Image (cartoon, rainbow, N blue to C red; front, side, top):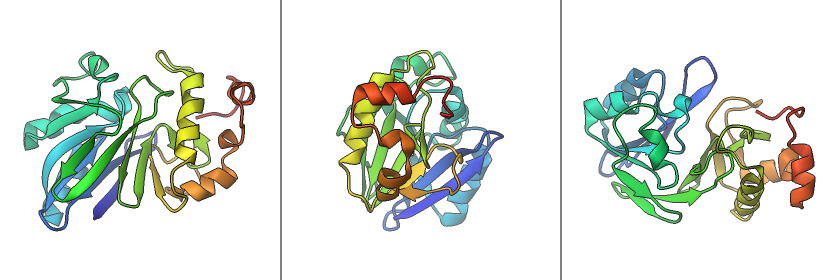
Amino acid sequence: MILHQIRVGDIGNFNYLIGCPDTRRAAVVDPAWEPRKLLDLAAREGLTITHILVTHCHHDHVQATGAVKEVTGAAIHIHEAEAPYLKHFFPPPADVAMHDGDVVKVGNLAVRWLHTPGHSPGSSCLWVEDALITADTLFVNSIGRTDFPGSEPEEMFRSIQRLKRLPDHLTVYPGHHYGPTPTTTLGEQKRLNPFWRPDTLEAFLALTQPDNDIL
């Protein structure tokens, strides 16, 4: 698998380029701010962008979807719970509404869609081989905010419990560079992330009040 993490913009956003080395087909994840970086990198790698995968529709994760689609013609995929919101930000609308457990085939790569609400109603993680793109559900040693319109702390707690059940060796690729390193592993987060320590919803809610340092 080809996987590039590209830092863009002024708030530490990460865009991702996922490529199949056999077919040279590729997907971009959450294109925003500097789409030329994604497009130029794909060209240098000899990759054809066929998919745009959107983990959630906050402005800083969808701002360049239209620009990338205009150049590539790639289909925009987003979870069904998030799709209605996309049209309120930037055209074009989603081409494919995804559901939990769906698989997107990018060449010979299978990208599994995991619905992990909490930060937003349709927030999702993308699991491909040994990589887990967690966007704004999970950062390095932190989690996404749950005080936005559409956010639900209770859903975030349930999403964390789900991620805890995934293999420790998976490399986590977050949506922002907010931690000490750009990536981590699920095993490290189980040990180090303070927001993953509560075992009950009540303890989690006590920790995630606005006066806590949650990103």
